[in-house]
Length: 365
Image (cartoon, rainbow, N blue to C red; front, side, top):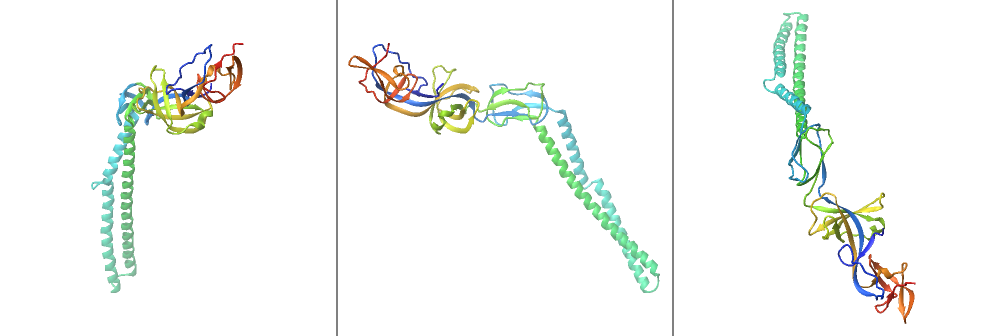
């Protein structure tokens, strides 16, 4: 089927011309050059609602055709495992914070050990100083002095070790608080994922799950999109693709609207060839009135390439082959060639070879 059409008005189909046994003459008419396309109507902001958590669908709060608001609750999943994880994470976070608080039993024990080590160091320091004085006065032995010095050194090292242990414990508990808080936030987020909301203002076009069904992460739950912003997704034959430009006028017709023609403009041209049907995708935005928001509504369209307001035309039924007609001159039939221009189902533009005075006839022989 040839995909380059020419239409006499902005309607999709021209009026039929009947053969005349008495002949006809070329006449000036308006011809509009257009590229044929077919496709479907889709909503803007379309996306598939998917599950980010696993569970059983507890509540389905929308149906096909419902209007929805951004952030509106659409589905609720029941997940015992997520609830248990959230409770465990909350308990671990509370315990970690308690371990870091002023009444922490873990830190209180270690702080007491640091205080005891500090007291012992003070006593051993005094005792060591006393033995030095005695040794200087030859009132004690060298062995007693060295024993006092050793006790002082051990106490000093013990205080340092107990202090470092306390600091490490505090750092570890702080890390535990941060980790447990992160796990709590993650579990709360997972819990929120069981309550699935809309990202857009729009309309529900299809729902895929029913209450009681098991839902896994990544499962599709619904198809939603804009209920007012629609566009036509058209397929244009490969041979016509080079003639398309952004902003070209488009006229569309849908079977569900028997006597209505919609207008649009080319908004986007996709450069990738669909090898299945040798076509390119072209999107068109509606101008003025648009069809109701029925997802996937089938349409046929003509993309206007040029409009010829006043061209010489003849009925296509008189054309023989690709470029010849029979004419009557001086009462005799004669086959002549002409140069053809634009055409539609019924009419052909005459570039040269014929004039308004030419009389076209059928060859009945």
